[in-house]
Image: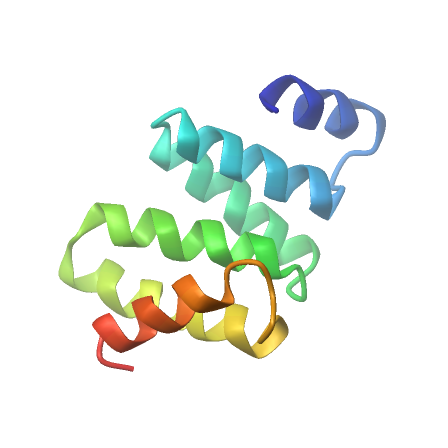
Length: 101
């Protein structure tokens, strides 16, 4: 997935779908800081790209510090706002509940 995302970004810099894929791939690879950079870039390019909010929420969940908890909650809530029936909606609802939202 990482190779595909990088290839698309070479051809179409700033492509939000490729940025979302890059962020997810980096998260799965354990490269959380790089994943957050990619997710933030995706959000800046297209704040309506729900998958970027999933990665942002996931990475903030993994950081487990006080500041990240609020950012994670915000990301999961934004995902649900954008994709209430999306692929990750059930997980997002669980995270919002867990985080006290």
